[in-house]
Image (cartoon, rainbow, N blue to C red):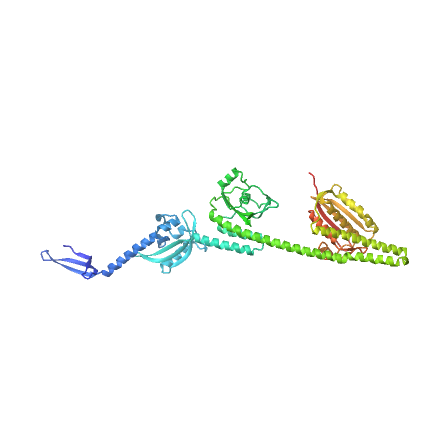
Length: 583
């Protein structure tokens, strides 16, 4: 006896159609209230029912996709209304913890573009709600504080009768990291070909490695097999100062040099290696250490190292593989540089050989020929006109012939010694030599030559000086320097030989009161590639070969030589030789 209003009823028709109606039915009563019939109105609501069913099915499908998506998904306005399991796993939060949070609450305070996360998030959500889809990169923070790179898509969706923002989060941290690695490796390869010097290459490599892993402590060690020394051409460390070259020891660097393979060692591994005697602790102890060998033609020539003093998880297989590639690039550059240096060295040696050859033939063609012309000329005069010449004339010719013979003899001696030094046939046999005694012996040999020009030779020698030198080479040096001083000092001039201790060296000075030299002559004095003939105060010719020999012999013995001079003020030749110092 009650009215039914808006009841949905299904109707199946003989032709197979199904329709839906909304029916309102009311009882018809007689005056006594007895039901005598019904009155009803039906409205076709088939389209509405179909539409609702489609919406319901769509929402069920959306919910299924939402829950099962591998991408993280949010439904939100300004705050999170719902989220799927993928985003919970990504951000390390539970669903209950995320609902009600705004995006900036699980993001760093600032995004990479410098804007605050709150301001930027609200702006993008507002744009999406107004019908403008958004796609952008974003930094999120997980519950445990890790940063992840996310690619975000926002768009407005209708859900359960409300307009919401659907946010899809795709974790691109690994992709971005791999992109950075590829770019970094490309940069290293490019630097390897364009770096002007090795240090700038090492610095660039350090910068690039620092973008991929912890590199606050980074160094490159190089091993020299001949000297058994390790050098550190690049060294950056939080605690230890730059390392000086050192003899091969027993540290982790040497361990990698020995085994020749990449090694990742944590604090426990380091302790075990020390207990076994494989390594010793050098420098501050580290939480983790990663060393990769530098190899050229399968030969380990160095090690590239990163270490971290605090975070024992700073390095793993990924960092090891990256550093192995870096080491390969560095080794290739070193190999190219070694080849280039070898080519330059050979080219320089060839140039030096050509210069030596030219100098040799120049001396033979000019300086050695002239004395013989004098000897031949005067001897011919003596033979043909002997009876017509006076005793004084004969004596003059004989003296000139003797001087020319002496010049030729001295020049030939220097030529022979020089040619032997150039071909490596002069052995270097250093011994302990009393300097004063050796100088005095050479002075006695040259006293007669000096006396002919009225030149006085004095010496101021510290008697206890013992030098480490090759005796034959040192005799040549002393003899040539004194002979040179006699040649360019006039009648009644003075030559002083002075020797004294200067730290770990003996300083020897040969000082004359001769004609001196101008700047041009000084600049060319020890150069093989500049040929010149000079003449002494009695027209004695000089080739400069004796001084070149002096320089070669002094430098071969670990010393150095230079000259101070002014025109008309004489010259001062100064050279150093290592002293023998007995403790």
